[in-house]
Amino acid sequence: MKVALIYKKSVWELFSNSKDSNVSSYISGKAKAREAFQESHKTQQNTIQSVKTTLSTFGAEINMVYRSEITESVIKNADLVISVGGDGTFLETSHYITDNTPILGVNSDPARSIGFFCSCTADSFEETFGDIEKSPRTDLSRFSLKIDEISVGPPVLNDLLFANPNPAATTRYEVEGKTYRNSGILLSTAAGSTAWSFQEGLDPLPLTSDKFQFIHRGTRESFSGITSSLKIDSLTRKGTLFIDGEHYSLPLCIGQSLHIQCGQSINVIGDLELKRLQFIQQYPKSS
Image 1: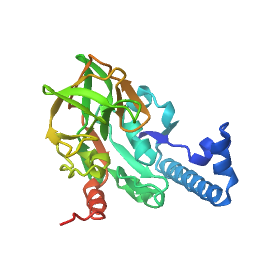
Image 2 (image 1 turned 90 degrees about the horizontal axis):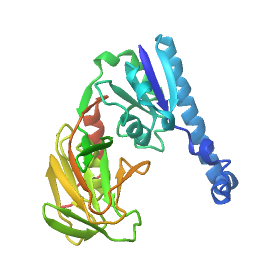
Image 3 (image 1 turned 60 degrees about the vertical axis):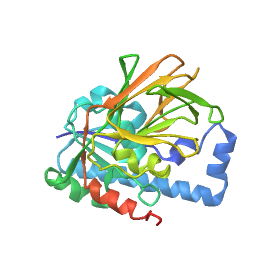
Image 4 (image 1 turned 135 degrees about the horizontal axis):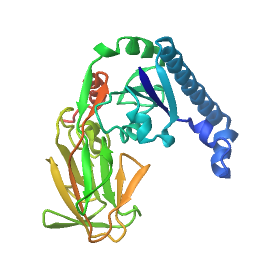
């Protein structure tokens, strides 16, 4: 089996020698912070090594790639994609999967990361991988994007925000003939409906739904809805699309139109229904 092993780097590895003195002094200078970052780094390194050792034991052919260096060929040549990190690493990896290649998420530091998409940890990886053909799987809906009828960006697994890049500025846009002036519009897939939109007060969609939800942000009595297709006309001079977090963005400038609709699903290994239930139970509805 050919495995694409995608991993993240720890905060300690990335920033302990940062040229930004404020960052490096905080991470390396204060004993409490330094110890926490070093402990997290050690945990992540141990997880990566544990996953590699198990894969080698099972005779897998491993192609190990840092998350910011993924290419389409890395994914297309794999029978299985394994993401080692948290949800951010999983989401970034998912952008390169455009077929039915399954993906397995391994939470590299479960004490500090929710890892909703990650179905195992270093402790449970050997058991999960050894019985991977019988593991539960979920096809999660993603949506695709077109700007002025031209396909753009990766398939979106979690959420999409259209907003002014300056958080203090007003975002102007039009949806279905109605003009909005607010803090932007947030759209979430079914899988992403327990993330940002959940914190905005929306109820989660069924996990396997092929619809998505949206909410107009920064407006009194904010309006929200559920749909399978939406068109946004930008009235913002330097509007920006933020895709699955902070690492991927596209401009959507004044006069341009964005069309969002259901796209290629993704095959995720693990019992995500159980993980979702456990997460939601932490936030009981107020009467």
